[in-house]
Length: 362
Image (tube, rainbow, N blue to C red; front, top):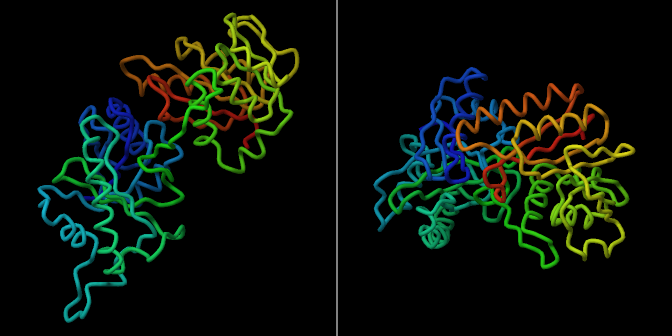
């Protein structure tokens, strides 16, 4: 089998399938998506996985938590020996007279990840994934397929169990895939966080910005606005990064936010308020129609009120991929200036996507 294996939030398989299909067609690939609602993954079959993978870089995908190049799909695995068919799929056919199964043509991997989709149906496979990794790792090293220690100059081998007798083998390129198992950064709620929504912004800063971006764009003393701030989860994240925050909301904020001296609360409407002077950042997690939010965010960039922004678009129940593309297109058009835009449905998102936009790039 040739193609891509992508993970997503369970229930959003149709959106990911539509995104992969549209993007692949635009790049000249006539592949097709295969999935089951609620499974947490999509297989996109294509004759040239490497070319398709180059045409669909992981950082550009919105609904994919992880993107991998398929090596093989293995069905009807014998529980008494799942390793042998995997080694057979990974090793090339030995040349006539070869004394060893190891061949220079075989791909070597720098690490092994054994996992299962993030779905209710697949969660019982967690024990199998843990124990099987311990059994497969020495077998891979014996054949020379896996390096003796983890290396960051070689691709990762992913084994994804979707059932006890059904697994995918896939290749993860380090610069074109998520570094976290299943593409999920595991974050913990801080005791001082005003709400769990703080995890959304923490994940956005981690996933939509790289280390260099964060060092350059989140400097102590910068000024930001949080539209629709109450009870203050996103304000708290910005404040903890050293920014001075103007929190805009008619509702109350948690009192301890003011202890730092870097938070000002204005009781105003986030759709009407505008800053008296340009700000470094604007963030917004208001519950409103996505096109209205996109239009308001575009106004901030068009008027030069901020340089960088992170905002959420709450998606409808139907035609979510179509609404996503429409909102992002309208946002870019109405901003009336060149912008760097990155968008993703994050682990801590629900029926929404998170967008990072920057004027003048990063």
